[in-house]
Image (cartoon, rainbow, N blue to C red; front, side, top):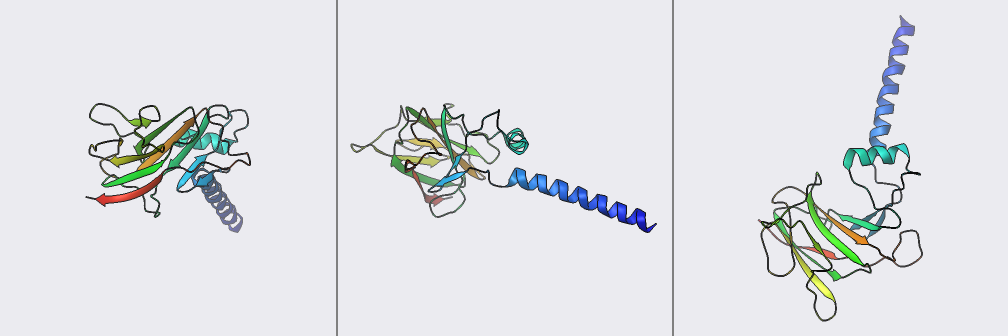
Length: 190
């Protein structure tokens, strides 16, 4: 009887530790993630070298970085003060265009669904962005339309910003300085 109880306890402990370690590896910050201001750069994923945990994370979340020859992906879920981005608030993103042939900025909810404007636009890109004489821009992130550069955000819940740089000379593995990315300032909340 004692042997059977010991065996059952060992099996239960093995099960808890196995499931717990797998959950931790899927939920933990990715290896190779680089932080630039409030933005996290997602490391490139190469199908040939991705380990089983990376493959499982991509299958579970759908979130992945671009391939090494495509560009870089940066994600932000907090403003410059460290507060979580919320759909009920309005934010102003200020910055200078990073070095890239094209870049896009998208706002989505916590489950990854992009917010859409009444005309169906879900992102801003560097081709259609209004800038001042020095190349600086301001983008209003809000659930309601704003004049100038406006990025629609979800109307409620948490907001995640994704900045994708396509065909950029910037790499995470080099000794070059990483770009300064847009700052995110909270204006008002309703």
